[in-house]
Image (cartoon, rainbow, N blue to C red; front, side, top):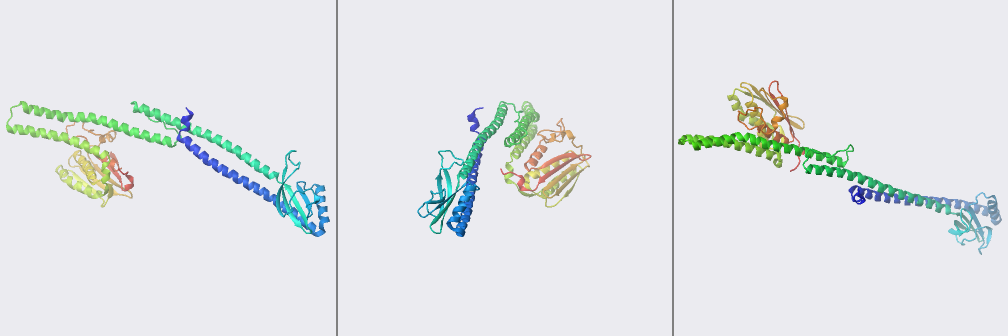
Length: 461
């Protein structure tokens, strides 16, 4: 894998950005530590010199210049504080006691370069921080201390942070290369899988590792999309086969009748009968195409733009009233228990068709003198609709197949219909983000539908 490819990845760029931010923070911390440490050491040194100056000043006040000289000589001889340097000068700058004579006759702090062997080479001068005060009788007192340890501490801090700075850069670059390599490895896998799918292997899926990072989540979603696309492609193929199979019979029948009418010597009345029969066959074909177009329109989800709050209770009552006469003609009774004001967010026309298709199915497939029940209930955040009958029911193996287009339980297809009624129901339920479950009614079939009331369950179109 080329270095240029690694450097150009988003992962490496992000690593470089975070490395830059971390180095800036590291530099700020190092500067702060350096300044605080050197300031603290210098302040401590100043305090020590101030204390020594105050002690010697007290000695001078109590015994005068001789007492001061004796005290300084005693300290020097005892070597109890060999790091300190002392100097007592008169008004002419002549050294009276001690060895520190290079300071100016002015009160305050001064920094002097002195030739001292303490921790220094022969050619290197020591930096001394000196505190000078004026004593009575034109006497000047200076006390100094080697300040090289402060500089040494500062240099040690700088050196440590420089090493840390370099180590952070090396580790950051290595981390960026590692992250970029891992990123490009996953991208290569996605690319290879995508190329395989483009080549025609629609069953191929992207690899999803156990890390569950952003790319794994993306691969998982892409796999779901491919599954959905595979299902749609399979449905299109199945629909094409089903259309050819289901329309072959009515189209052949229509052609046969027209040919028979053309070849026969029929009366005007007989011609009218043949034309009427042909129109009926054509209407059946057109109804099939209309149902297919309606399913496609519903599945495109364009109808969601017209969604609003609707009263499902009024819809169910209206459908029951419309189909009740047809049921009574066959000796079938529709019993209903409908809770008032069950509202949900959806399309009134489509929900009317859904209830109509389910209830009509129940009427058609139940024996005479049997009962059909319709129940509607509203709960906290969903609405439940149950339509049950006491017909032959549907076996568990076929309960999902009946929602497929053109699928019919009666394989002989002697009854009228095109097998699209429940396909339309399934499309409407999916459009409303609902759920439909078919189960046994002991005997018969029970259809349980649940719909969410809240509008945030829908995406904008």
